[in-house]
Image (cartoon, rainbow, N blue to C red; front, side):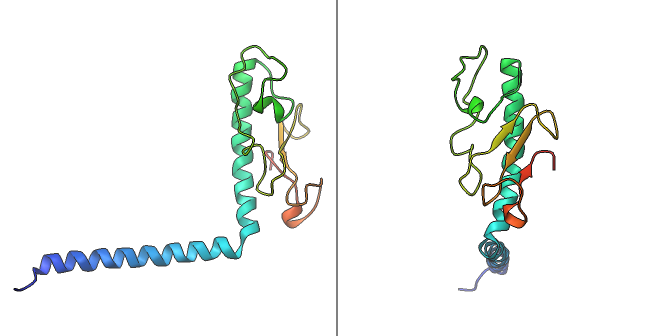
Length: 135
């Protein structure tokens, strides 16, 4: 029995696509594994943007900005209109396991959302540098 040339060609295409995808994901995995701190910084910037958006949702519901990250987690102040939690405890921590800081009013924008980097101290350079929503 002779193989159908169309079918053979389709199988070859599928194998080639899987091979190319494997190489691509292999390079991506190497980048993530070889630069875990850089990956954390990238994730940190994204999470800060998300928290800033959730602070806007809090404002829409309550009529004022949150004064701390705790305002997004629980309604301890018994605020009218609160529809949270706006964040989980996991989302309230940066990739190094430290809590984000909200400052309202902010020094750099209406509300500052800040990660103190890997060391948890203000200032710093490299992976210890502070990251904020105004940057």
